[in-house]
Length: 529
Image (cartoon, rainbow, N blue to C red):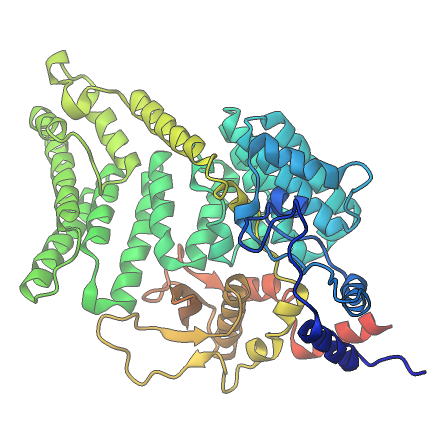
């Protein structure tokens, strides 16, 4: 007798489902309206058991042969079933150790990471670090970390979990370096770069690793460069921060001239003033004030007008101090109880300068606390906010990046490498007023795959056009990821160093992930042997 074809088995299974009698739930089991706790897998990390093809076939055959008593449906992912803290640890441990130990290495690593997160929830930070190390070692020993697609996504989870635990042990500098260890692999994908929690990038100093990370993040998404400038200012590096702020202003003027951002101009003025560039600061503040007034007159007022006024006031205080009227500058600065729009670094530095040599009677209001006290308050407040979220059973699991396999990247190879009559570039005859005046790209793909595809395609287009590189701005709307981009040469309008991506470097970085069609064909041929 011939074995049944798969379609025949499916038909039989459907027929059995239709014919099967309805049975009451056995006594002691949850009925259809009762909430079931889920398997230990769901209780551990919210993800179902690993199901192989063989297990799926066995489940189908069981459904056919068990006289209407069907095997249970496979579980679906359900984060609401996750346990917390010690209960979460208890759910994970039997699947990591003992007779029920998970045999699929990739799934086992995920379970270990889930247990590490639960250790953090339970405030067992050393145990979380140990589990992060265990997950990292098992992934490496199994060859998972040799897969560049795994290493740049799920493979980063061990570092992020370890960093989160180190931060909670008051080892913030060490936590930052661990969190950024894998960032070179994701330097063209802003979503992955932003996956490093902001609280791990805090404090009055910048390491070499963080400086590089900030540079990559700005180049992967132009408007994120404002965050880079903020961090440079917190480290007292105002001349470098001024270059970044100018790059953002230049981007605005080049690609959104109808709606210039007055706040970006005003922040650039404040930063230049703190860097000692008085003439440039005066030019930027005049432009900010003129643009602010112009937009109101034209009926296009900016939101956050009070914040723009605050930045204008801060520049005026710095200008007053520079002219020698320290007493007047101190009075104006002290009168404000809180700064909302100005960067923390600029406020701290202004505080430091105005407190120097001030009589005790002037140390009131905004000058009552010294820079060290301001930093302590900032760090203590952020730590309290972070610890408060450790109980929500969600935030910490964001430390585990999702996985985009090789097939997802390879699937877009033909589209990405085609530079004649590009299928990614959207034809727009005339961009709407106020919109980003750049070429637009769109591709049906997950966020990280799409972002890497956009960067590689922009680099390939730049080379074809005889340009050195490009600037790029990802756009997120309605669950879709697109991007605006412009190819050109260094130093041209909109092509400042802080935002410029070198085409040759991008192609070298991303072509191994998204190989050209001929290379991909050879790869697949080798895999078949």
